Length: 107
Image (cartoon, rainbow, N blue to C red; front, top):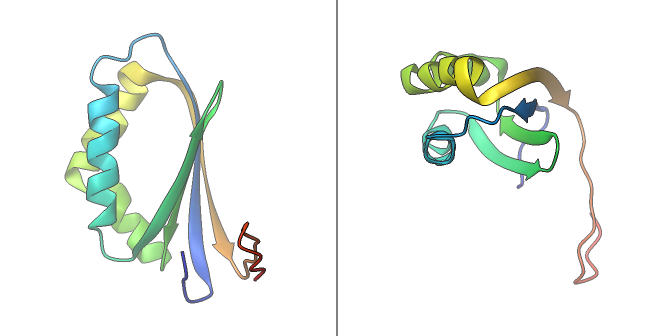
């Protein structure tokens, strides 16, 4: 992901409940919807005991727009009612990034 600095990261960490009916389908749909939102830059995620999803956005306004999106708001409600025993959201401003890949390119 190449983005103009600064940009924002929304870090969503969660623990799920035993109830998972409909979760996978809703999660996939939210990934599709987020990708079509103005200001969306990308996403990374991992799941073990604690799930971590980091989505990247051009601005705080773009993040607010995604939070208020109707289908996303409904998914948030289902998450609180059924799928998550707990979650936390952190919003961070990204000032710089760098990395490495196997092809030998360092950034």
